[in-house]
Length: 172
Image (cartoon, rainbow, N blue to C red; front, side, top):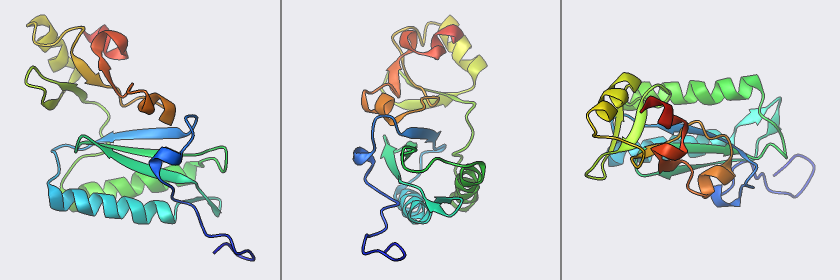
């Protein structure tokens, strides 16, 4: 309960209840975590978000897990905005989980895409260019744009889109 009221603490909410304008951070897991690692990651994120604050104010936040690879953390900044310290806390928690689970989450350099067999892959940018030169990826290749910044963009399936519709097109 909130101090002095009968209102329940609502710092973590279902991802679907966040407004389209909510801020989002996208992280990709490499290698793909197994069931045990996934359960630990999701439990840890739930626990973290339940106590996530900025300047002692509760943050209205949620997370979602897409394709066994992508962790989306959303924050309704119309309630309380993130502070540098609160973002540092999130990144610190993810870094600790990387060590604990033996996966990378905070490396934003790989290009994530679906190959011809519909498998999700990650490669370095220069490798993506090479794959383009070899005709293995192109304008219709589905890529994952981890630079999206709001929940609404994720909702309209703009996290995964054709290379031609994304900043990735300049790598072709």
